[in-house]
Picture 1 (cartoon, chains in turn orange, blue, brown, purple):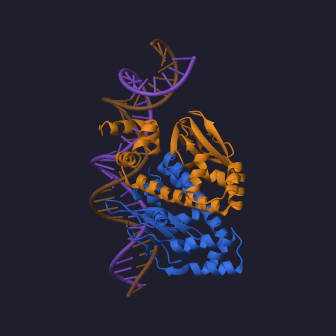
Picture 2 (cartoon, rainbow over the protein chains, first blue to last red):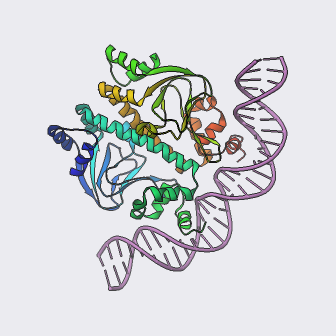
Picture 3 (cartoon, rainbow over the protein chains, first blue to last red):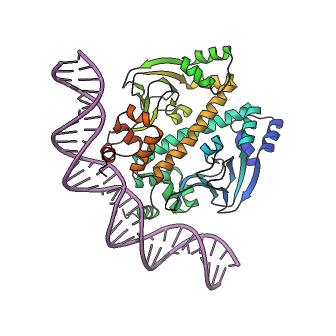
Length: 189
Length: 189
DNA sequence: CAAAAAACTTGAAGTACTTCAAGAAATGGA
DNA sequence: TCCATTTCTTGAAGTACTTCAAGTTTTTTG
């Protein structure tokens, strides 16, 4: 829980009472590698903050193959954000890629937190604003770069991360097949 | 300006004094069709709310072709959100597709608004949270649907909108060439 | 430590798209 | 209302990828 609070305090100031209340409104758990934190079709009533470890957002295509659409490592939030906002069923699943320490907050508790602590409203406003910006850049990469350029770009932007998760998940995150990424890396393209 | 205020009031309550202050901190202008509201490489110190009309976000590819990555019609915000957040240079341009009435808010004034009026912090938190959710769905469509499915999906979700903007812009928004979309519509694929 | 499972590689064949070029149709401005 | 501009269409040729299938390497687990 300390990582979580420390992260929040990097963005907004909270007094002790507020910190206590914040801790009361969230829960922290360990999840094993491969464990599903939220399953597709389940009500997406919560989102996740990674204190330690790594999560991914999974989409099941019609053919039954899994597509990784997002990753989250330390200090990132992850969830099916639209389903969470609307309190509807998730179309994405959330899975742990490593043994992970995760802070979970429910919709109900998040609403209460932001109502009672204006600095948290501010924190989440900034958080989602940055996300919206990052998403625009991602579309930009997808629309203007070739598969090879996208991989090289990711390699320079997140060199350590690439070592941390299986290559076929990186491939689907970049919008290409595992086989093609393998060929790119081997210089066979 | 009345459309703008009415829109905000659909989400949060403001008293007269707050409404006055809000109006003071933004500006409303008309833009002609094709007019550029924010140019690539310009400091992205402002974002735009569409009171009437239609805007688009443009990316210039290396080949010099324009790619439309987002549209905004009445009651939507548009801008280079990451550059706005970081007060850096825009990598996208913003252009009016029709004669449009647009509310502009600068970074400085937005910061002041959300600090002084907590309900606006809340409004923008919800706004960006929905955007983050919508962006996840967009990636989902791009990664799981064929070009034809993406077009049909857009056609059922925004039937009126498709009539409103040139087809080649819809094509680039969907991540495909204008020629291919033309063939899809003609059933020649 | 061995066996099983997961992840990666390779080549061959296929395909969903792009690019180019040119003409036709629609729209907009004086 | 007419001319210029913008937008849309069409076909032919090309390509950046995908899919499949099989083998190899690496990692995980009892």
